[in-house]
Image 1 (cartoon, rainbow, N blue to C red):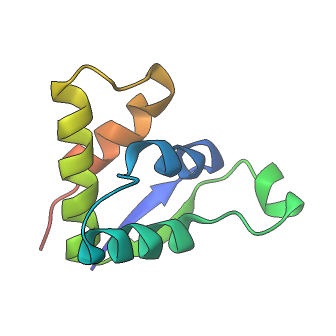
Image 2 (cartoon, rainbow, N blue to C red):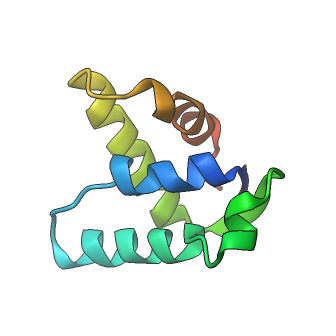
Length: 93
């Protein structure tokens, strides 16, 4: 498992960087990631501090592949840059 410190803005970006289509394993992994980064209420949405979230190796690998695909096709947005750099710097153990 690998943890990442994620801000509310970065957590929102996950819905844009993860694939919306794929095989069952891919979509189950996407669902798991989105459940982990989900913002549950207004109080949490207003929070400025980053939150530590734990991810499985398979989830990190899917995030990295998604970022690399978006990068290769020049479809990354400026608002996703911070999250993309965090994901690409994370090491899978």
